[in-house]
Amino acid sequence: MIKHPRQDDTQDETGVSSATIVDWFNFCREVCVFWAEKHSEKLGGPGCIVEIDETKIGKRKYNRGRLVKGQWIFGGYERGTKKIFIVPVQDRTEETLLALLEVL
Image 1 (spheres, one colour):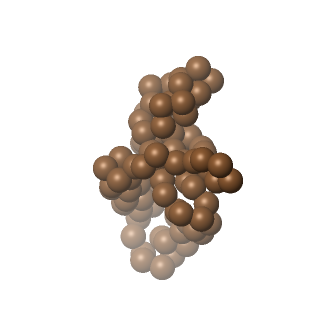
Image 2 (cartoon, rainbow, N blue to C red):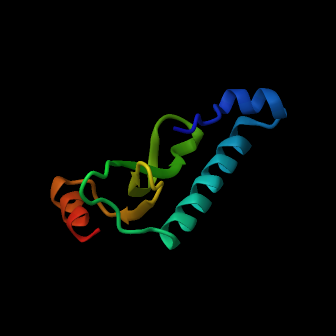
Image 3 (cartoon, rainbow, N blue to C red):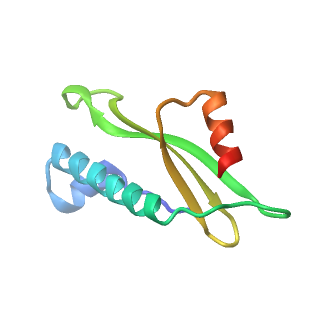
């Protein structure tokens, strides 16, 4: 897996403010999501291992605490072929995610 840069390491290396780094990290995530949505593929099959996860991309309220506003994203990665899928979701309920897996 890819080791993600830490915010404080990036701040130390660049001398840029924490708020600016958070904005850039969020922008980079949004670019990745846009690209992945356009290049998503059907994954899986006999003998294939697909890793799945969900995450929320958004902004912190008043630049403090946990993420509160944003978009939930559900995605998968097929080991070996390195194919991906990524889709925005309204909620993370079991029903929603299982329905998506059947379609994808």
